[in-house]
Image (cartoon, rainbow, N blue to C red):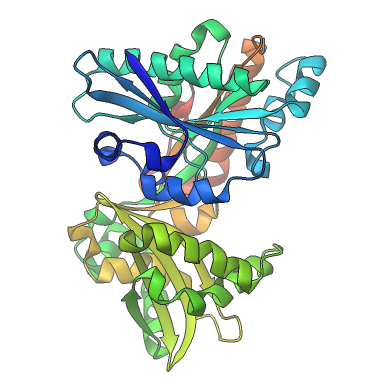
Length: 391
């Protein structure tokens, strides 16, 4: 494989990266990478890596980053490695720079592939990407190269590529996806739900409609100033120091790079904005990114009408297979039809193997997958067997 590296989004060959991300998530696209490029903390570096076949065709690619400290608390490898490696090694992991492979946008990593690449070609390409990512991590004197929030397939591919370095694969979290393409309108959706859940869904739709509130669809750049206070209010309600100016800056930036992909549902009572749900459309998926509300108005099931019921009612599923809902709030999402997708993290020692106890790793994965099932399987429409999630 011919490996090529690019330090800026602008340097990426648009045709190559566009082909590689044609089947990717939104978060690997140049638009979202441009957002991240502007948001990189001081001292961080980024590198985009592509692997090309003998004919010059780009077969696979990934983003790689180095940080002097984790960019977010959920990207802290020492937390994941507690109890799995020795104390001295653990202290080194906590004190040294960190490298992250396969992206760090919105808790979803990914290796991007050419749609026509076969399994063997993909495997060779991933090996080449992994070797370059490891060299990049060594140059930053990182202790760990971490690939966060991957699907099972990507996690196993990367673990095989780093097998010689003693890669650790951990079940990490769960994202949820609403399979909106299954239903042709609300009546079809109600019929799909278990009988005991249908009255609540109908009641939530009726509550919103009876309130007289309306929903209109707009592009993000048109309404940044109107939705920033609503998002700030939601963030502050959940304990975050997140003012209106910061919200306006964040979503103004996303509007510049992703405005043409944005589709924002704005709920209004008269002329007053009451709530919103920001989504981005990429390929056949909607990505539900963020919401916000004015808490001076009574809650009329605004969130579920914006994120779940309005798209179903409007027939969005005829052009969209699913709505990606991200991490967290599992009971609320799963009980209304979202399906769980397990995500894994691969950790690789940079200067030396992490030497994790394989039995401890297996037991950690078993316990955490079973714990998720015990807590949430009863909410999943169609049921859930987390034994399939264990590696």
